[in-house]
Length: 77
Image (cartoon, rainbow, N blue to C red; front, side, top):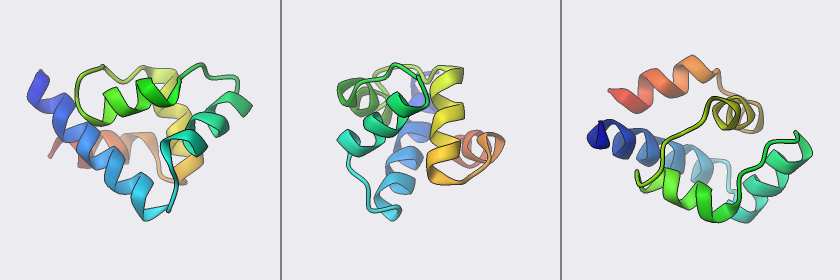
C-alpha cells in the first residue's frame, strides 16, 4: 500500500509542477472549493506519507483539469 501511495504522490507532484503551481497555491484553490487540506498535508500526500482522501482527489482533478480516474490510473502504474 505504501508503494502505491508513493507512486501516486510522485505523479501528483509531477502534475502540480507541470501546472507551475506551489503547494500553497494548490491549498488555496482547495480552500475555495471548501476542501480542507493544508499545504503540509499536500506535501505529505506527494511524499506518500499520507493517504489521498476522495474529496482532495476531486479538488485536485478540478485544479489540474485532469479526470480523477486518470490520476489514479496513471499514479498507480
